[in-house]
Image: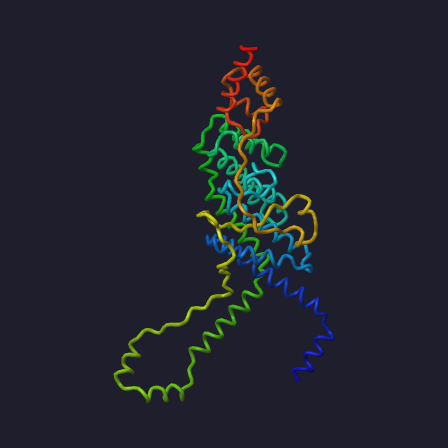
Length: 358
């Protein structure tokens, strides 16, 4: 009977179609798992689960718009998660921080946000925190972040306010408290709640939960004959001890994602697993396989190079325009490849000495 049913199914349904449906369910399950781990603050488990999600994304049949959207959401969450880790790189330009990259992806997710006010709030938080995190490293990083956002679709009034803060080098400005990183995390969680309510993606999760509950209920019900036979072989004292002892059940882990051999660090640095950079070209493509990448290893940033003729020219022009000592304003007008005001001051001293000696 079973063989006949199996034969009927194989003839009426193509195996590739079945594989596509199963892959959709598995992708949904991993997506929900990632969202839950992010909301619960289980960031190490998030990074571990991300590798499994990336592997499922490679399935050729997963080329729907919704799947691409979920992939972008996971890429966005990964960047927000590591928002303060400036040693983690997602873009080819090592000066682009995780939060700056997250802001870039967030603009692509506008259609996934039903509440436009929520979308704008997260947008503002991403911009402010991108600058705030960079400012703690130095004015040069914060200035580059502001310049990077100039061509993006972000509120102009926000940019003006941040430019003033960066110029004054106020790393603890109250404005950063109002748009804090913790508020960003909570607001993103609100976005995930709304998205999951609209797109549940919990078919496997519900079936697995029902299966576990069924198994646990079956274990609680013991056959009466077996129980009587077992009790008859024990003494009265043993039975009393057993009645007083607490009942303990074996804990069950739903699809454990622990991977012990996945990462073997050479130092004491924390292992980071995250989606790699998703370029605009990849985002525009329709297949999830081409838009999702994983296993990003942190890289150290490059040290400032020797001064170029173009940088010297910009420095001279800046001093001519603003005067000596106005290094913060000069940094805002010209691109000095991430140099600080102190570096400009030292270089100007060298240039003056060369002029005197010449």
